[in-house]
Image (cartoon, chains in turn brown, red):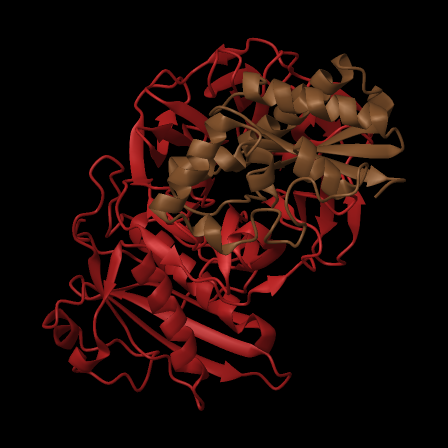
Amino acid sequence: MRRIATLTRNPAVIALVMALAVTGCASKKIPNNAADIGLGGAGSATPGSQQDFTVNVGDRIFFDTDSSAIRADAQATLSRQAQWLSQYPTYAITIEGHADERGTREYNLALGARRAAATRDFLVARGVPATRLRTISYGKERPVAVCDNISCWSQNRRAVTVLGGAGS
Amino acid sequence: MKRLLKPLLIAAAMIAAISGAAIVPARALVEIDVNKGVVEPLPIAITDFLSADALGAEISGIVAADLQRSGLFAPIDRAAFIEKISNPDAAPRFEDWKVINAQALVTGRVSQEPDGRIRAEYRLWDTFAGQQLSGEQFFASQANKRRIAHIIADAIYERLTGEKGYFDTRIVFIDESGPKNQRTKRLAIMDQDGANARFLSDGRAISLTPRFSPNRQEITYMSYESGQPQVYLLQLETGQRELVGNFPGMTFAPRFSPDGQKVIMSLLRDDGNSNIYTLDLRSRTTTRLTDSSAIDTSPSYSPDGSQIVFTSDRGGRAQIYVMNADGTNQRRISFGEGTYSTPVWSPRGDLIAFTKQSGGEFQIGVMRIDGSGERILSTGFSQEGPTWAPNGRVLMFFKEPAGAGGPRLYSVDLTGRNEQPIQSPNFASDPAWSPLLE
């Protein structure tokens, strides 16, 4: 739900956001960036807050079709997440794995789980204690973007790092 | 389709109770060829069943709708009828029915018993042979008036095609409502024609993939109600729910074994891959059947319980595999272009239905159990999740249009003909067909 702020960190994905605006994807209708849900722009969030994590660090990464490999752009986001999570150690974390709609329901539940596990393993390798992390797969059941073209599907193939526990 | 030429000796009033309706097998008026399909449905006249109230016409209307939806029968417009049936026990004027080309005729009567039950009788006539093909009567409570109609439709279907019917069956499915990015997905059940729909869960947690037990008293399904997606059992009669097993990770893609003693499903491994397990419902023992660093899911037993078909991406992309029920002899059977998933073994044992993705489209198809003879029955933007009618002649699946709409249920013949939408209260997905009730 808060992806524009995340994506502006990444020039490659800014192009995608512009393409979406041009094609008029239905995802414009749902709150899809920080401003839509009243979080304000980058930099205004209190350090260590949920908004800080979402806006300044980036709470989600994206995957290629039918893949759970952590892409180079995603590695940069996850490295920032690991650093931030070490700085604010009170948060428990749930990693949600998601798939796009171009797969069958049961297979996509498994694929979302594999993406969540790959994301977890990357964060653990960057020093986040495994005990702080749990994973859950939503398969294709919780799309953020609703339309029928490639740009929307690419937004739905994601792993979202959700803060929970003491700090939330 | 063939005319019945030989006179058949069938008692004029073959009376049977609802439980033990034995029908003398005979040559079929309708022949089903799965390779060609029935090109011309059989013209059949279904008269309003006589009754003191509207119930007779209601029941015969349900019979006509069932037979019409099967695609094998063409009920004739009642406005064309010449003879008005006033005594369903007497032979009709066959000439009056032949002249409107009714090859078969159904007459009947519905009345109320002193104890409040409904009594429904029907007779099926071969108009060209000039004789009765079958006649039965059934008793049921008022609440089961639609079931009595479906049982009569099954009897007519079986007598005229030589195949078991599938109308006295139900569908469990996922009712979907609300916007696509926040959709409520809850368990629901209805008759195969969309009537009598009711919810089985409240929709607070996402529920998915319900499937019937062989005795159709229970369903197994996956739900997020504990926060962790896990497989559950639900007793339909009592509403009692129970977690299946005590596994550390996500469990999903459940189905019953043909004897109803086991649930087979996928269990997520800590490394993010999924393997196939069974849980014996009596002994509570679990058995791991696959052990690959891949996604192994969507298991489905052969009807004799000796083999299991499943999806795996161990070869790189999702394909269909078969193994023995103990996990040995795992072998790939799908080799076509694209990916294959959600395989389901036919109740006849001879075919496997599947979802295929190829060229940006989704397809519902069937193949023989060795992977040969692939036949695509339906192609579209998004469709998946086939389930077999208990006679193995019809498949139901769900189909979703592009954009912000939602999924709906459809049925299609094994021939690929006669694709039909199935009525549902809201959007609907994950249909699972019940067995016939004995």
